[in-house]
Image 1 (tube, rainbow, N blue to C red):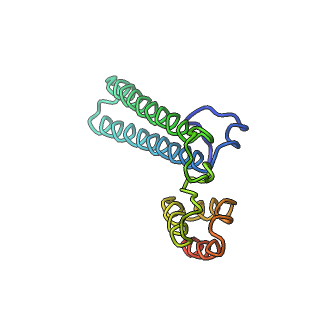
Image 2 (image 1 turned 45 degrees about the vertical axis):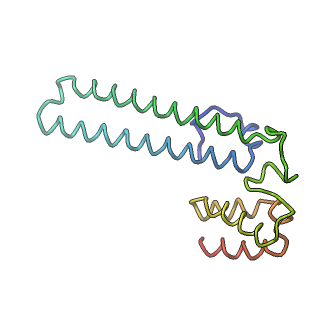
Image 3 (image 1 turned 180 degrees about the vertical axis):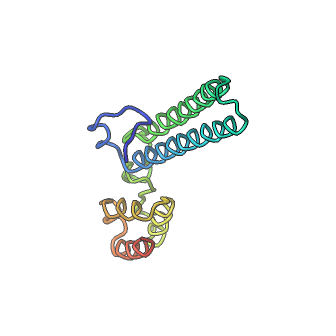
Length: 164
């Protein structure tokens, strides 16, 4: 996936935590969906003008400029929200980590919880990821989950694998 919602170097991209990467992917998908909608709206308006015999009237350029401005406004909002949300999820951004857990995990890492509660937390976090293949890949790369879940790690892996 190409990320062009915000400018990032390759090093910055590789340094992102799991949560930040998920935020970036989600924002990029939103932007891509907006671009598809923009192209569709332009084509629809063009077809209407062709059917009415008014394509040469200048209405098309005016409408395209209006649609482009709205697209840029919405992309700006998505990018601003992304930057803000990513800044909230910076490693070490909050000095309060009462559980003593890993701040990059994306879920609560609290070793005082029972294994069943840990399993449910991690499962709910990964099930919130829409793409099953991405979900499994992120889970497989999650070293924190391996330590945190113990024997439940394999159980959750099997559950996530069933969705692929």
